[in-house]
Length: 276
Image 1: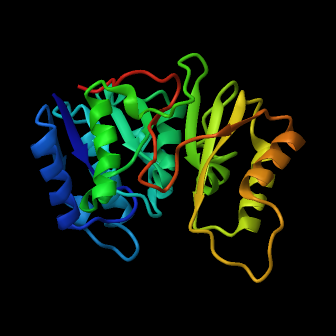
Image 2: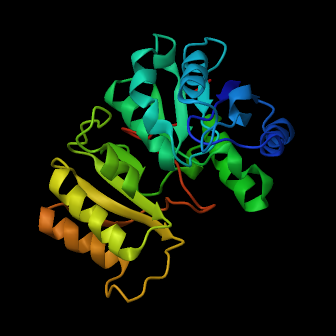
Image 3: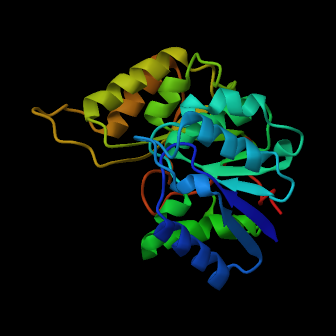
């Protein structure tokens, strides 16, 4: 059994969304248990509770030996505000856990990876449980918790370490105390709700700050706002352009992103689940 705890380091979810995720686990994955911290439903302006409330919930669950894994409820914005303080307070119990999320949660995954705390994992989150396509994304993660690697990103070879980030999140992490050493890694990036010119601008920044990585893969870029003029390059053209400029091997596409098809990327070397 994998004993999963859920908190919301950024924005809140509803009790209906939590109930849907709990029902999915109860009906289809009885080998697991899932517990939602009350903090998931708090509201403080944009956030799921104040910075202190979100920090305390995360540290409480991470340091609690009753749980094997932390599954972050939702992205949004806000985990960067607590990430550095959270990892500083995590104990030896936290170092044995699996941590799953993506998008804004990339700030936390980066901080955990930098500090050698547990197994950070890019994967879909419980907020998606109310639609059938969303539930399939969650099944992918729950199967992985059971040791089934069928939901892993297909390009993972088990030989080259990899990470996966939202593009703007990775750009914001660079040159901060949250940034892990990505030398020799395959870096996968995806984006949502950004103009094409913004994607270009983010790649410009990353091309100038990434270390000598093993290569870059581009995931989905979705919900692109319409601009007043065409940019003139596709997102893949942009990725290839900046990779060539920076001497980074462009390795093609990855099946990650803000879509129900979002695949799992354990940070480091891919393996069956380490939880449970």
